[in-house]
Length: 84
Image (cartoon, rainbow, N blue to C red; front, side, top):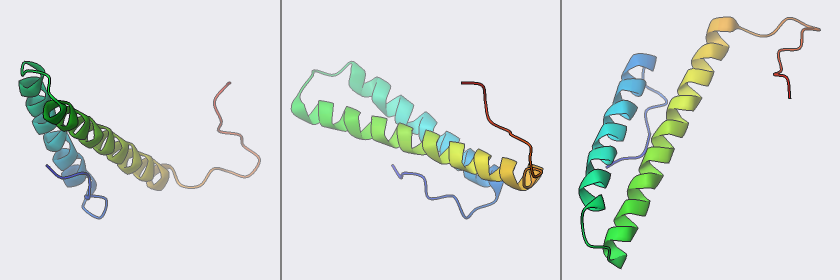
């Protein structure tokens, strides 16, 4: 299982690869959920959760970059923040 390394690939391909990795990690995590809890199983579950978080973070970065390129820079004097 690889963590995201697709940031230099075309948008669609990078997202598709991340979604495939998420699906595979989810399947493996489900298989481990039914196993006896041992230190090895717990370590594997943590590693798979790290993969999931890494892929989700990677998709977020890809989408943010795509949005930035699609919208372009914000006009001067316009606040694009969210209400806090």
